[in-house]
Length: 374
Ligand SMILES: [Cu+2]
Image (cartoon, rainbow, N blue to C red; front, top):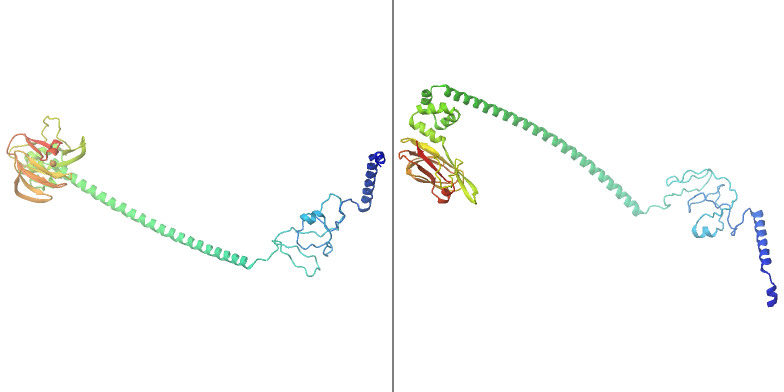
């Protein structure tokens, strides 16, 4: 037995098997035109791209016969492409482009054909229909709201335009009013200037006669504008009382405070000047003529109360906070915060005279000035 197996030759057997297979393949090619492991394909299998599941209509209007499918078709629903040349199929009628909205048209003469929608191939459920209807309603609402907003916007624009027009009218009116006011001021200034020029051109003696009877406030305004040299000539011709009043009126004392200006302490000024703290005597700020009556107008530009004191003289309180007064003789008076007061005194005691606040700290930090007799 073993010997007979040893005498067996494999090469002739393999050659015989190869020749036999080749003969079988040749016979298959001659008979069927192709050779495949699975011969169950039918001529209706195609790769035309027809949507799976849709009714398949054959070239002759009859439904294709069900036929056994290849393993690839059975598992993957995939067209069986073997690469072998298939049997030539009869030419199908031309198909239009497949789209979701245009189902395939049936051939003429076909009865009982029902178009199959290609958009998923299923009917919409009531819930989906309700959602679609709700979406349509919502869209309609949004469109209505958009229209309302547009209308409101146009109304607002119209109102804005009206307001702009009104503002422009008001501005125009304001400009006209300002223009007329400016013209009036200019006219008054021109008139006043003419009056001043007239006084300047008058003889000093004649002007002095008028100034003696002129209201003090008006006199001050005129005196500020007149050429100083002409004014001094006029003053020399005026009656002593009027001239003295005018002189003192021109020298109103304004008391002010510079907060923390002196190493943290407040500095006090009279008409902008603080008495120097160097220990040296400052020059007199005003020169008096003996025997004349002077009026000091004080304006407190600070919030502090100051006991104002005039050395070596008594003064008469002639006005306080806008109210006239007479007959009160003092040498110290309380000047309230932001208050105005007027005092008159007669220069009857020649010599340097101190005018100051009686609060030591205020006095030490500038609230002090000297009057001298000429
Ligand atoms: Cu004071």
